[in-house]
Picture 1 (tube, rainbow, N blue to C red):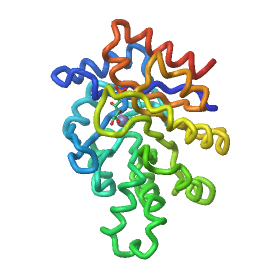
Picture 2: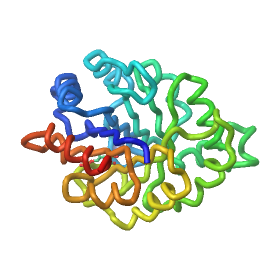
Picture 3: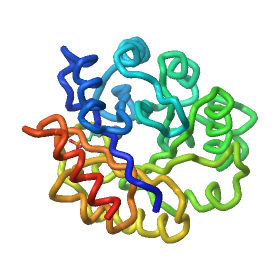
Picture 4: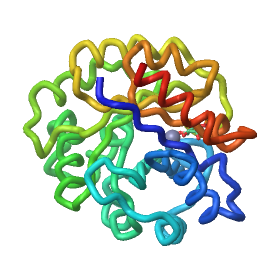
Length: 245
Ligand code: DX5
Ligand code: ZN
């Protein structure tokens, strides 16, 4: 599996001190920032949009290489992912991770794809790449991972995701209980794709990291476990060691 990438979720940061909290977590050893975007529609919660992301960007140096330190990993829990691609690129997003479930419904917006809904995630990935970002595709607990085989096996380079996100909670809120029931998805992805970046998000921390790492996850999101820790640097190091061991 690829090396560990630790991505604290800023959903658990102090929103009144977001710039400082974000630059601090990077200096404490974080690789990426996981930026949760919620629209109150795809999920029953709201966070923030491009102006806030742009403000954080001014506090955190952008990555100097693809997937490098400072990458903004934007987790788009929004019903219309295609609509926001250009705005988030402008705001400083590096990796645009949309939900498979939302890409399917957004096919209705572009008439040329309505006849073949399955091609919609591919088109969206190509569009994200064309706009200069890495592309991720996320699956909710209720979505079978099998829906991804076609795109991972058959898509050409520009339509292939750079990362798959397996949700280990129902998206919408930080601080929820880790769902070990989702780990077989990670295991099967890792068995099939040894080099794929596989991200897990929800309920990750010192008590659950070993299960996720053993299943094959290498991109680790942790919100409450990092921002709520007495010593965040220690938690970040512990998560990294569990993956790289
Ligand atoms: C949940 C978000 C997560 C969340 C994780 O919908 O996608 O990124 O912040 O929070 P913890 O790590 O506290 O479960
Ligand atoms: Zn997230």
